[in-house]
Image (cartoon, rainbow, N blue to C red):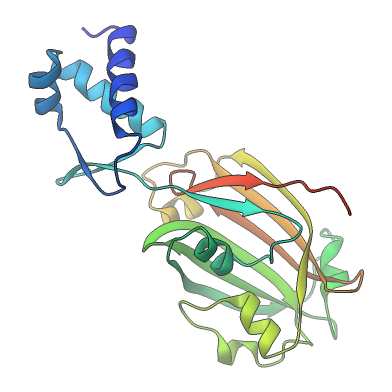
Length: 239
């Protein structure tokens, strides 16, 4: 039976070796670790599981273990509240899949929805976020319905909602408030993220104002996969 210190020591050595290894590189298998490090298969398996828990590798059933890439998703008052732009700035390829879009009345239990509502309605857009083709999160955006008449006709996969509402409707948005916590999503969200069972994910809520005003223009909430996304917060002093 393996001891905790043995597999952790092996995991530490492997983590050091993988520090400068390009993402997507195949990592030694359990059998190869047994042969190269003189440990038991149980210890080798535990070490690889530890690396996965540290978000350093990804184990693909039937294919092997590979160095994982995580992007820095930077949250700042001076960065536009756009998933597509933020991922592109991190050097990765953003993508989206449209899950649903619906118009509805604002819910009074959410004090920001009545303020966002235009002509008495809001439009709710739900999407799946992708980073380099890998599922990175489930994003729901709530926007003014009256101001975005006909929005449904413009929606589809692999689009930037921020760019769309800005260029087509002239709705310029700026980050106002943002809060993030680590929590466990429900079964539906876990399924969308590709998890066999719900596991801790980044849960973020964001309020965005119409640029140059105090009017709320968007409320969004996102469940993000911590294996893909690393949250980075920049707090700047007012100049």
